[in-house]
Image (cartoon, rainbow, N blue to C red; front, side, top):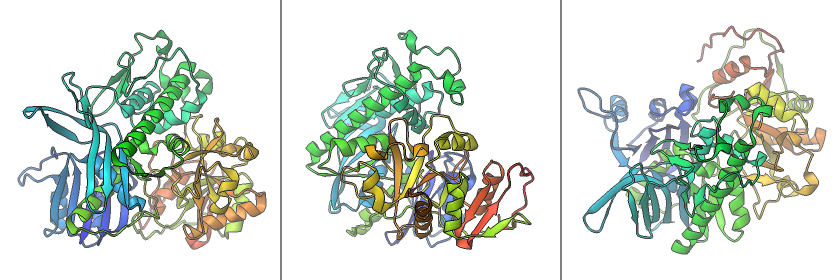
Length: 569
């Protein structure tokens, strides 16, 4: 049975299982070129290039209704290609989708799944036999195994009505500020979008504890004297009681000018990171208590907080913790497909997620029309990078999730003290945002305090450098002495590994500066046409295409505004 799962919401996505095995995963933004795009029509069409037996739609019961047929648009699209496809809707079980993606991808026999995000499915809870209240999923704990599937053992719900107030120990439903709502509020205060929490996380280490910042949480709920939640989306800082937090100018003014950032902004970012990661740690303790499990899987949007993920490793050295690398809402497309597959087939086979190179299998071609191209080997490209040149790398299938892992990457020399500023300027990013690194896996424990980890293939942890390595790779060392690091083996990505290996031969450093192949506000590139367009609209000079052994050179100050027509676009 072939199952196509989709997530229609933000980070719209599609994932195809063929007899339970993952064939591909794609986010709509990569195909449509619109950041966070929902409604994965192009993802569905990509899936329908294969035989599909079942379409599983995750999301809400309130799907748009088409005129004449009354169908939702996703079912209608599939019907027009293949009327024999069975349509199955998994309504308002958003957190179950996250949990399934994390558990079935972990490779564990059983686990406790923790899901933390802003607002999941909208559910109505009956209590005292006849009374009901409704709200959005915010934090959940599931007991997971292959025999019984997933069982909810704790859930917290949020809503906008003050009348929502219900607790029986296993279910909490109220109008409180929750973990992610606090993060959304601070992100908005800092001038970011409410789902751009990664930027807040990047600013946090510039701050410190301050008695001028009130506690953001009282127990497990946010301080409503300063935080105002909005469900399902958004939250706000109310600074009326705290003049220290009063904004005197547009918060976006400091994004490109470090001299304009306020202490209040940095301290607030520090506080929300510190307080929320402790609360999720408390949820992990609750999960162990309720399930007795020592295997923990984490998903939901907060699961992308790589600083918090490392904190859990340090706080719980005796637990086996797996963080879903597609923890945002896009991953629920795969989770919903897994849920349907394992429920309907009673399959017990484990299918750990070993590779994130899951994008569509495009045939890439481009006519470079007289633009200078050179035949190269990895050693030539490594030398170019060591000479402080930015090189964009494009090969194979795109990466699932938000991390570039060497197939859609922009590379630079991590030893350049000015490297962060150089690449942030080229990409159009904010000055404070750090960059990641990719390294040969066998050197992992030489460079980082790994807390028992042998590898970090999905780049889900911001880890401490060992003291003796401080200062060696300043371009990828954050202000707090950490780096979000990816380990690479030859088996995982042969070309990328060899490129890092050649860079080590030249510099002695087994690490490359790695950032996603995109410009600020844009999705990662998906096709070769996207890659060329991105390079031509930036100051990146080099595009490396290892499958062709080719390096494309766009000299500085050349004319890039005239778009060449791509015959294969």
